[in-house]
Image (cartoon, rainbow over all chains, first blue to last red; front, side, top):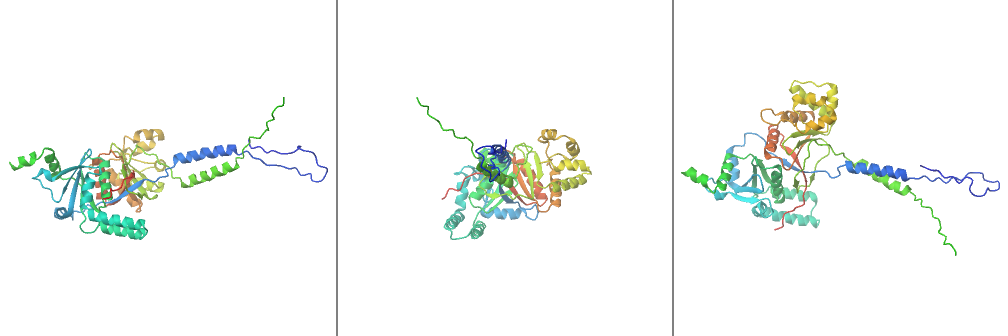
Length: 219
Length: 203
């Protein structure tokens, strides 16, 4: 419908002189706009503007060099073992597992007053330091690079807990991500995902039956 | 009685400016767009506080549906063809150029290798229907997933592995996938999550 209006014939004929036709070129852009809008809508619906978030994890290699002894060594010092089961509950114990006392295993949840409170308490120093750093960064006292460097230093420093995450087959992927998330929130730099051992299954069963299994074992 | 004369105004609006704006917007969207890939199963990723963005190229994404079906996709068609040829060789299968061409345009794949030929012979609509119920076998007896990853890595050493799994996927499947990756010494990978706003309660 692009129309070109010409003013031909309009007005009075001038006496001689310029015989040039005056053409005022008016093109109707409405269809053009229509089409553009359609295309925009198409592109808007088909694009994924927000890129998905990711979490980077490093798994330990499968080398058999890391022996049980090494694992125990880590465990005995600063380790916290989280056992994820289905549902919203999460079991944890610190240090070496104590098979005799069912109370050594604690139960908690993914809520902020659950496992997070415990981990934050264990990691107080690092959390404080990192909060300090964050404040400094906000006041532009340190640059982003310095910040990331110092954060990773604090996270891997001495005295920070090592968390071992173990998930049972009944746990879902969400549970795992939630647990990994807690590591980020609580500024824990050293954590590992490991396979669940029969020992842990025993501990949970023992906990659920309030120590019946260990009593039976003693008998 | 005098009639009030309403001045006749032309209702024509100059659309040029409007058209300028739309063209501008259109250009913006065309340049920034990365198309959504069609996924064989609907996946809702769990939320996390992590804010790392995933790189755009060289991604080998592993898609795990809520029922534990595993699919894979790559962002470069050339790599897909090469990987399929290599995997085919491992299993003693050769694919015709016709089949390779069909495989190249798939947005995601996840078919047991013995069904691959039959699958590629299907029409696109039929493929969509059956794909969701297939998936790459990951059990320890018949771990074709491992071969896919191994050959993909051999094809393109710069691949980054990204795992995208549904939040209700049982951990058993994830464990299998992770163990397979561990066996291949693929110890660094990304887990795709969606954004969740939550920070540590200070103090």
